[in-house]
Amino acid sequence: LSATQLTGVLVCLQVWEGQSIVKLARMMLGETNPADSKPGSIRGDLCINIGRNIIHGSDTLENAKREIGLWFKAEEFVTYTPCTQTFLYE
Image (tube, rainbow, N blue to C red):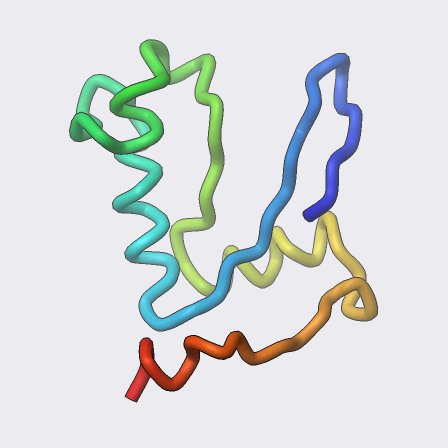
C-alpha cells in the first residue's frame, strides 16, 4: 500500500493478485459509467458522475503491469503465502 499527494487529492494505491483478479476486481469496482454499475459495487454505491470517478482498476493484465510500474519499484513488493492458501486454491 502506498499513498501520494497528487494535485491536492490523496491517492491510495494497491496491487491485488489472485486467480482471475482482473475480472473479479472489475466486478467489485463496477462499470466505468457509475449509472451502469450494479448496486453493491464501489461505483454503483459511491459514484454518480463518470467525470468524478473515485476509483480506477486496470482492465487487462498487460495494462495492470504497465500501471503498477508507474507507481511501484520491483523491490517494494513483498511475496508471502497466506496460511489460508491451501484452502482457497487447488
